[in-house]
Length: 388
Ligand code: NAD
Ligand code: MG
Image (cartoon, rainbow, N blue to C red; front, side, top):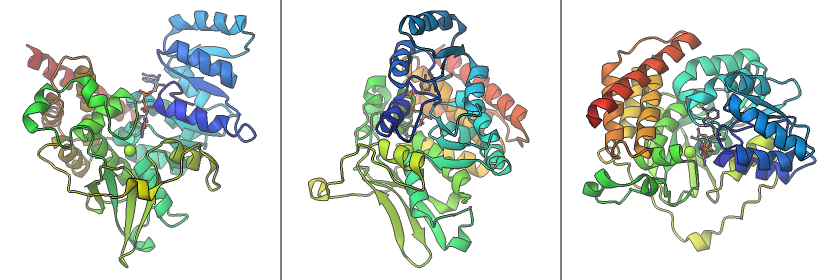
């Protein structure tokens, strides 16, 4: 489990612990939340625990040894790749947030494992290369993002990227609209990180919560869907659906629309992907339609939420553009969460970074990492200019 200490990680351990006959935890990775990782290791007794910093290894190892636990402690990016590729690992949950998850997730793909992908930034920054590696190594890629999991469930079994041959016209990704869907526009300049992270329907990590507030999350998901399902930008629609009950839909050429519905609880897509093609209990309450009473829909507001348009722009531009978009977004969101820039500056920084970095082809992993680094440097320079 890459990113065990995060929101998706905690939900995954919750599902796995309900089925001790099916799942054994081999390795748990965290970054800086070493106390959370310690508690998780006490409960799940993995063979390996991975922390971010070498400086945390000795302390955690000493605590394990006093607790009589044989878990070996490793640190850093190379250790993430090592545990993701272990021969005794069948399934890798990719739940690190951001670009840091790319290489360990690729390491799992290159061993042909079943990869449960929550870490959408991996597909946004490296979609073409990542999907080619999945194919080449015969890995099984299952989407955890609730929208993509819903699309996966609503596509024909065995769908392998042939939309026309499968009678698929297009897909519709639903978006809650986030905490600022109806906030007066003039208030958006002064909203705080805590307000941005107070999502109406989902409890998530802080980066994806801000992405949901700007709607960049939906933009990243449009790009994610392009790669997962081999669709053109025109075949990926977004509709605002504030109740988050319909998790996404597939429109077929005959007029049929198939969708997956449920309570907004990530344990549903996690359990689905863990057990696929079987089904296992996830601890999620059944959907109570009379209690929900009504479902509503509206068009996304591209003026209020410029990040969604920026993501479509990057997708259409191709080459390095989505990598640049992702890197600039990570830099801008971190700055907003640190109180260094106002909310509306997030979209401005991303747009200015896309303007500044030329569109170029991105043939291999080295090029992807170079584009990511360059875009971060450009975004940081823009931030500093804003602050000055
Ligand atoms: P989170 O912030 O709660 O957890 C992130 C995890 O990544 C933590 O375990 C952290 O230790 C680890 N991590 C962070 N930086 C790292 C680094 N540099 N090196 C190694 N590990 C690092 O985030 P989350 O909400 O669990 O989201 C994880 C991923 O899943 C994101 O890509 C997010 O977009 C996606 N996702 C989350 C949800 C959700 O409901 N939370 C839904 C759909 C998709
Ligand atoms: Mg989602």
